[in-house]
Length: 376
Image 1 (spheres, helix red, strand yellow):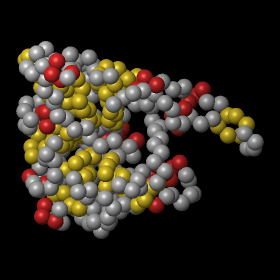
Image 2 (cartoon, helix red, strand yellow; image 1 turned 180 degrees about the vertical axis):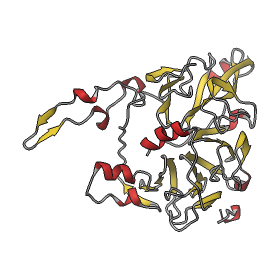
Image 3 (cartoon, rainbow, N blue to C red; image 1 turned 60 degrees about the vertical axis):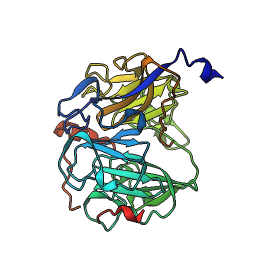
Image 4 (tube, rainbow, N blue to C red; image 1 turned 90 degrees about the vertical axis):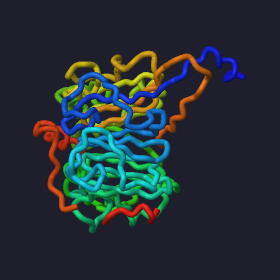
């Protein structure tokens, strides 16, 4: 009855994809390589209303459609776009090698891409210099998506860091591969043996507890709260000997202003969240990825005012230094129609180039077989 009663007053909605931030390799899909400080609308490379998820990596971006199609653009030095070549792509283009293999979800690392198929298999492409493709004896890079054969359980969700990746299976198990976190682990635990999942170049079981914790660097405001300075930390006596209070950034803490957030996406040092139909951003802003028109870091989650209003946020995605948002826009009066958008589920290689030497020093410091569709 509610749908019928609003038919004469309803406003039909159109979905529009926006992009902003770092664009050194064309990762915004706008056809050029200039940084963009305010959200810019992308031209129609597919029907925006059919977009299922948007995400980005070190210098590349990926869009997944309802039908399982994959559109990619940006840096492709190690084949992370999965197109069969290593040329940069300045506009979103369909990933032809995946025709006939519907994709459910995608996760992007610094220079690689992980793809989850509708059948629960995991594919990977891009750099494998740190084992991030999950193929321990494979080439140093792969320019066409390949199956991670040793991940035999059905996977329901994938994620990626700078140089490591994770997968959650239908049974609740979590697997991790890639050695990108090993150096940090050795610094934190000198002289100790690291867990296998930190040094494995093929999927290794992490945990079955289902618990999630977050913590880390906060020098650009990426934790969404201001912390005490290191000088404010004083030694305290706990039995013996003296120990130091743990830094605030080392202890998982809630960010109350994001309570009820419908979606959160993390970049290198900036983040996006959908909270009460608003896109909030915070963290590193040198390339304008927080979308406020400045290059000043944002210390607390703040609405991106430059996005059109009124509109409804459907999806957000972060790359290392850029941002994407899919918005539902009011249009002309028409009978009630709900826009169908499916929410995403909760190779010899050279070293990758960065968005400039300065960006590489920042980003790398803290984040750390040909494919045949018939086999699916």
